Image (cartoon, rainbow, N blue to C red; front, side):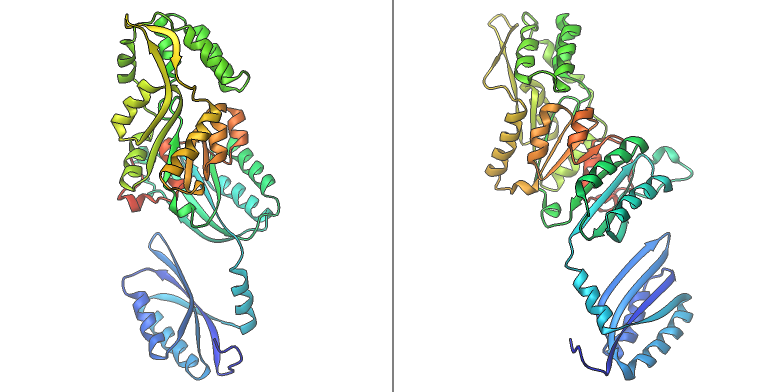
Length: 414
């Protein structure tokens, strides 16, 4: 760029009004005739009303004629147009700011209100972050058919560096709890756009049940096992110890009941849609579960899941559970190890991995993954996770990955 050339200037052109096909082409035709250079361009379209900004560099002698022609064209097209000069110094300062960090803040809820968005944007402002753009990721809401409005999501593109990221995270999580809204705050880098491996917990994540509790009910020891399960999920007792004690209580249960339980598993809201999109987009999918292999393999066949690592119940010659398990227990530490191992096998950078879970034994893999998401999780897990989903189904993960309903040929309806 010729910084000291007095015969050139920058002009910011702002066009607002009803959108129509060919509008941008008409503007560019006028600019092209005078050899204008485009330094920046951006457009937003809300309810058929556009806001188009174009920053040009053009010769002094051509600028007056260009503005005149654009005014005539704007009148012809029925839109508003405005011009603002931008000095070389202002332009260079703006260019220098582009080197700042970029982040994505995603907001999800059943619906989104001005009160919720106000709370989120106040946190953004307090941290000294600037909003570059706002996108709606979900389909448009229906007024006449509100039952179709199953979710709402918007995404903020932010520039800058948070003054206190830990405090910001804490504030977002507090708002999340108080206002029934979910947040994800991620650095906007190439890894966010190129996630490749996703690892799920199974019980209370992919399915709305704890399989060991279901088995315990059939064995007549439901209350005893459930008490141990809940204590383990709260992180009060060691997972290996609790697992061993619970499996021992299943001794004598006929193994055939597992098939009946599997066929009646309550699949979590949004799982069908999430799995369909992930498979279509080439993601590798794993189940890393402290539950049982039998149920993981059932889900594997149902959804075409690539990897299943869970715990194997020992079955005696009489077809009954022995009260023991085979092999190494898949606990929290093992889940984190497996995530790293699968990433290595698939030649995926850890920054490209995602982990989703609800219990204390999921925290190690949530921390290890590039994107760790607590799903309808226990309080301790939510407090330690950077992202959480509590308001909608598991397909909310898609929005944290940047998917837009329109990309998927959907209008955000089930």
